[in-house]
Amino acid sequence: MTIAPETKTSWLTVCTTADLSPNTGVCALVSGKQVAIFNCTRSGNLYAIDNFDPIGNANILSRGIIGSINDEPVVASPLYKQHFSLTTGACLEEPEYQVKTYRIREHNGEIQVLISTK
Image (cartoon, rainbow, N blue to C red; front, side):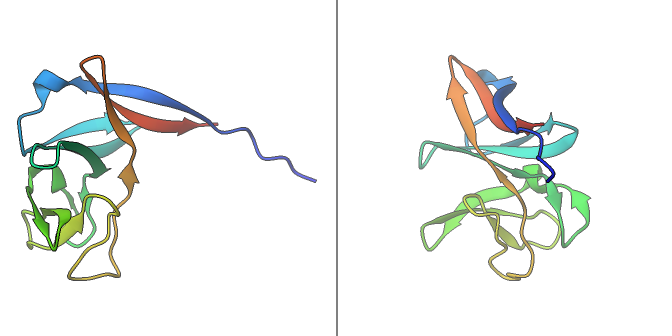
């Protein structure tokens, strides 16, 4: 019998609240991967998804425009304008594409992303 290594989680500080402009995205390096972080002031929520656009094959989603479609918070890719859900990562126009989402929080003025380690 093989026992899988224990997975540990921790919060990684990626920036401060002052680094986030309202209704825009920034890119942060999280465990070697680019993550797009969005400060949506309409809902008062923070979102984190992969920065890599699987349709345009570029790390670009942090530069997209955020909004909502049918009350679903989305980011429009700056390349081909597909919308990715900020809550699920699903592409609304082409459901076969999806990006990873990350848990994110504001803690004592710092923006933190939940990471897993083995």
